[in-house]
Image (cartoon, rainbow, N blue to C red):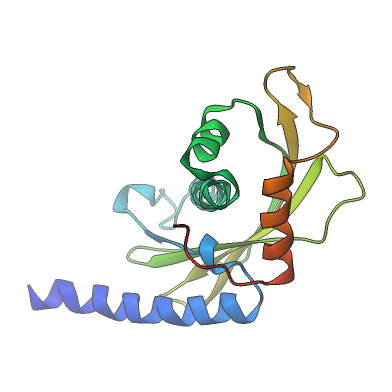
Amino acid sequence: MQRISRPIQILTDLTKQGRLFAAQNKFDERSFWEQNVPWGDIDSFQHVNNVKYLRYIESGRMKWLQELAIRAGGEQAAQQLLAGRGIGLILKKFDVDFKRPVTYPDTLLVAHKFLPKSADPAHLLMHAIIWSSAQQRVVTESNANCVWYDYERLQKASQGPPASFAAVIDESIAGVPLEPAA
């Protein structure tokens, strides 16, 4: 039993270094999400399959946006965001830079931050990293362009996000630490 738990504890301690790196580089601490690499995510080339990185980033992004929606308008706002009701977000495009292969075992830290606002208020730009605890470095970076979408009208919400959500985004961009939601 000692042989199994010790490597896990070491990786957990090393994840703290990733959190420090991400915080120093102005990633929103509310976006931090840890992902243990499952054995089943390893492909025949002996590293995490590239599609899995996208899923890790997607899961981290949705967890972060859900938390921000709670801050902006409570649980109901978060449920609407996740269910595609009212004004929500749709991923328009993204790019991924695979810097280093990830192998098993590893614990990854996914972190996000908003990029400076687009000239078009309907667009929301984000940057994400994946930090490897085993390698003690960023192994993947990604940029995403999301669009505010009106699910009732089935069209882009050209005015951008609801005002309460816009305020939470502005605070995140400014690096304003927020207390956990009540």
